[in-house]
Length: 196
Image (cartoon, rainbow, N blue to C red; front, side, top):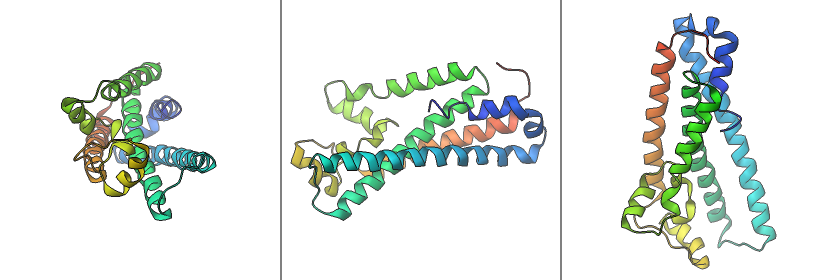
């Protein structure tokens, strides 16, 4: 988020006249920037998961089957990818209206606030907050899917009933769609004027 939170505003400062004076090119510019951001986030997450897996194997962490382990890694990448993309797009949209530093600070603050339910003693209300938090959808160990419980149960990690991978993908897809649609509206309607 720190390195990709000003992609929109950077382009806006550099070549806004070419992008935003051509109605047809605005959306193609927007989606090309989303593609650029998504490639960087995806490459980071794949590298992160491979590195983490190698450290886990070096520390004798084992799973029942290679397929379960591979599935867990793929889901970690997918859920984190959508979650990070969501907040990176928000930071970029805000950076078109306010300073990119302030938009990043605001986005990180909101991101951290969504972590709060994981630090409070878990109760039914906390479980509800966790199930709707766009950040905590990516915490794989709380999911109640059988193949995850088979792995986390060995380590005494409790899952949350009804908190499945499908639920997380559904919730993240809703949040992601809302943010992308807001981004489309912003890009289509934003006016050009000097920003810092």
